[in-house]
Image: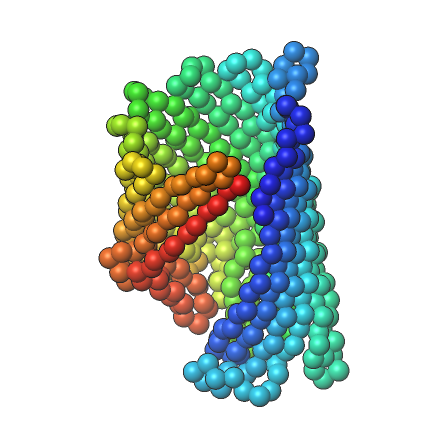
Length: 399
C-alpha cells in the first residue's frame, strides 16, 4: 500500500507498507532445507519546502522498518534431493531492521544547490535453536548498526546543462544465508562476520545536446573493506561458509542517451562500464591481488524503444546485452555474455475519479540459453542458468 497526504501547500506525509509470505525449499549437497518467510515492512516520510534566509530549502525526514521471521528445518540429503527422516537443524530466526534518516536540500539561487543526508541503521538477528542437539543450545543473536552520510552539490548554469557531484559512505551487513551457515556447528550463527563498509564519490553531467536529444554521463569510484567471500572446511566438505575475504576498489562509467524524434516515440540507450577488482582477497589460504570480482561483467548495455500508438495503446521493445565475467576470485574460470530480446504491449484507461493500466510483456522472446548468475563454490563452480521465454500480465489501478 502506498499513500500520500498533503498536510499544507508546502508539507506532505508519505506512507508505504507491505507484507510478503514465502514458502521455500532447496536441496544442497548436504541437506534439504525447508523455510517459511513472513516479511513485513513500512516507510513513513515527511517533506517540507520553505524559505530560510531568503533561500529555498527542501527538508525530508523518514523512518523505515523491515522485519523477517524465518522458520527453518534441515534434513540430510540422501541423494537427488531426497530428504532423510533425521532433523539436522530446527531454527527460528527473527530479523528486525529500522532506519532513521534526514535529507536537506538548500537551493542557492536558480543554478546551484547543496544536499546533505544522514542515516542511522540498526539491524538485529535473533536465532532460537529448537533442536539443541546433544544438549547444545545454539541460540544467539547478531546485531549491526552504523551511521552513514551523503554530501552532494548540483550546478545548472543553463536549462540544458547540469553538473553534479556526491560523496557518501555505506555499509552492508551479512545476509541471512551468510549468518545461518555456521562453520562451528550445523546450526546457529556464524559469529566471525562483520559488516562490509564503503565510501565513494560520483560526478556527472546531464543535459541536451540538441532538441530532442538528452544525455546523462556519470563516473563513480567506490572503495570497500571486508567484502564477503566463500570457503569450505575439511570436516564438512559439502557445505559453503562465508567470511570477510578482502577489500576491493570499484570504479566505472554510467551513461544514458535519450532520443525523442517525435512526441509519441522514445529511444533510450544505457551503457555501463565496471572496473571492479580486489585489492587483496584470500581464497583457499592463497592471497590474490588485483583480481576481478566474480559475477561482475565489465560491460552492460540496454536499448529500449517505447511508442504511443493512440487511444491509450502503447508498446515497446528492448535489447539487454551483458558481456562475459569471471566466476571466481582467482579468475580461473569465466562465462560468456548474452543478449536478450524483450517486448511489451499495454492499454491505459480511466474513469472520472480513477485510472488504470494493463500490460502484457515478454522477456527473452528468442528463448536464449545463457548463464544468468555464477557462484564461486570452492570445490567447483556453480552456474545458474537464466530463465527461458517468459510472459507477464500486469494490472495497475489508481483511485
